[in-house]
Amino acid sequence: MANIRLIEVKEEILADNDKVAAEIRKQLRSRQVFMLNLMSSPGGGKTSLIIETLRGLKPSMRAGVIEADIDSMVDAEKVAQEGIPAVQLRTGGACHVDAGMLELALREMDLAALDLLIVENVGNLVCPAEFDTGAARNVMILSVPEGDDKPLKYPLMFTICDALVVNKTDYLKMSDFDMEALKERVLKLNPNIRIFEVSCRTGEGIPAWTEWLEAEVEAFKK
Amino acid sequence: MANIRLIEVKEEILADNDKVAAEIRKQLRSRQVFMLNLMSSPGGGKTSLIIETLRGLKPSMRAGVIEADIDSMVDAEKVAQEGIPAVQLRTGGACHVDAGMLELALREMDLAALDLLIVENVGNLVCPAEFDTGAARNVMILSVPEGDDKPLKYPLMFTICDALVVNKTDYLKMSDFDMEALKERVLKLNPNIRIFEVSCRTGEGIPAWTEWLEAEVEAFKK
View 1 (cartoon, chains in turn purple, cyan):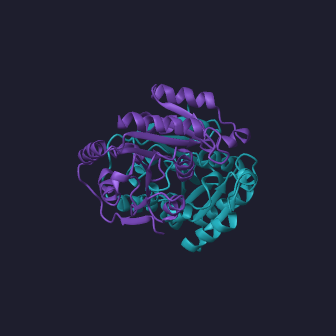
View 2: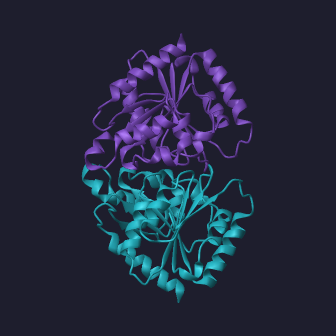
View 3: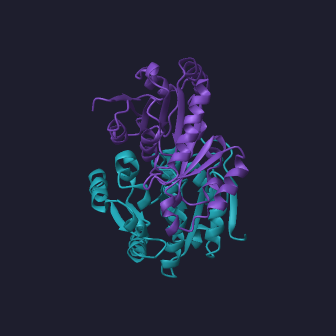
C-alpha cells in the first residue's frame, strides 16, 4: 500500500534509551510535532481508537501513525486505508517500542507535514511502561473485558500515563466490571490522570477524548 | 491467608534459563508432578480458568498453583479460597516467569502431595513465550474480546503452546470474532495444537478441557 513503510528492527538496540528519548523529545519540540504513545494489552483496541481518533479530529489537524508489531502489517494497512501516512515498525520479537526504534521510524516520516504523531506500541501492559519513547503524552487503553483489577497488577503502566481510555464500554452491560472501583484504584496510583470512557464500536465517548487530544496538541504548539 | 506463601523476586536472575528449566523438568518427572504453564494477555481469564479447572477436576487429582504477578496477591487469594495450596511469586517488574523464579517457588511446595501444578504466568503474550519454565505442557488462553487476529501479531505464543483455550465465548454474540478464521490462523502456525472453546462465566466447554487435562496428567504419570 502506498502509505506504508516497513522497518525491520533486527538487532536489539542497547543504546541508552533515556538519552535517545530525550533527543527525540527535543527534535519533536523544535519541529512542533506532538507525539502520543498509545499502549494497551493485546486486543485492547489501540488500532480501533486510532482510527476513531483520526476520523474525529478536525480536518486541520495533520496526523501520522507509527504502528509497532512483533509481526504482521495488518494495523498499518488499516490506518493507511484512512489516507493517513503510516510507518510499520516490525520489532522482530521485542515486547515494546524503545527510543532507538522510534528514531529509525521518525526518519521515514515527513515531520514538517505533521501536527500529531500517534505511536501504537506493542500490545503489552508491562514492558512498554518501562521505556520512554520521547512522546509528549503517554496514553493507555484498558478494555472492559480485561477487568477492573488491572491497576492492582500492572501499576507502573497506570502510573506513567497522562490519560486512560476505558474502551469497549458497550460490554459493560454483560460484565461485572465496576467502573467506580476502577477509577478509585487508578486515581490512587495517579491522581492527575485523565479518564475517558469510550466505545470504539458505537462511537460513544469519542468526542470528549478527541477534544482533549486536540487541546493538548494546541497547547503543545503554542 | 494460611495457604499462601509470598516470594519476592528482587533481582534479575540471569542464569542460563534453559539449563534451569531442564533441571526443573527432570525433577518434576522424577517426582511425578505434571506442571502446566498457563499464559494469556492481561485479563484473558487465567485465574478464572484455574478456578474452574480446580472445581472440575476429579477429587483424586491433587493440584497446586503458583501465581506470578508483578504486584498484588489477589489471584493467590482467590485460589487459596478454593482450599488449594498456592504460592504467590511477585516478579517485581519482570514481564514473565523464568525457570530461576520457578525454582524458588518449587522449594516452597510439597511436591509429594501434588499430581498437577498449574503456573499462572504474568499476563503478557510476548515475553512468557520466550522462557521455558520446565513445564510438561504450555497452554494459552485467548479471550474473545481480544479479537481473532492475535495469531498474526503474537505468533510465537501460539507456536509454543500445546493447547489453546478460547475463553469468554459468552461474548461471541456481541462480537465480530470469527472462530473459523482464528482456528485457521492458529493451525497454520501450529498444526498439533488442541483448541478448546470455553466460557469460565457460564461453565460451557469446561468439561472437555478438564478431561483433556486429566488425560494428559495420567499419561505423564505412567
